[in-house]
Length: 227
Length: 83
Image: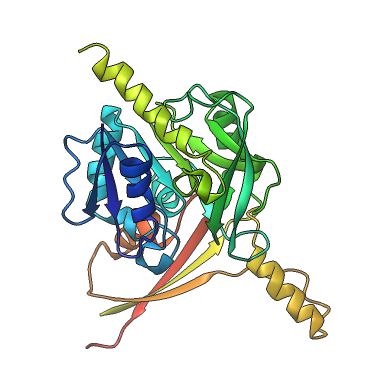
């Protein structure tokens, strides 16, 4: 399986993402500079965390206008799995690939610590290796992680089972404790916590590894088993 | 040239933690009559004269300057200084 990690100016979790795919999962991965990236031929796309364009205007807003987002939309429409973590999630929101927006954390602080998440939906290509209701420990590291959407959007998210992860102890004020959501089609996941920082026991948790293993398993089922 | 002044504010009902903190500070300073503070953004754009300036500004606001999910915008177009 071949992963693309898109690198924006200001990305700082791109190497962690690359490490998770390449070393922890043991698959192929390329780090692609956002201006030169050609996303054709990749089996999954990873949007890393960081502070693209220094979070100017709004987190993820400037990156969401770059040409790479046109390609992202095409790949999303084709059903290619896209995972956006932290700033990657913010870019997905700002580009409209996922509904809602991010506000500053309720306590106004940058927070960096482990959080307990509930796996609310394990019927996705990103979470099939988790148990439904499983509690996992994944670190957060953000200033603008307070997920907001209007009541109508929230009702739709719930109805379609698009809320994939919730916080056990909501750290940032997100509506309905939302930590991660998926698009209706089921191939674009955005989450504030960093699964790529929790892929080995030596990192205090390897609960994030199953997310990447789920992607791999799904890809094998789709493309290898039938071949 | 035209000078466009754009104001971006959080929509009603959207929590503004920053505004709350500023309000708390004002109250601490003794300004007890301040009941709410909402923090927004102000941008000045110097643009070439164009018949479609208003629809262009609205496009800019919807596509980038404001996030319609959480923010409202308003703007004025004034005579700018020729550069």
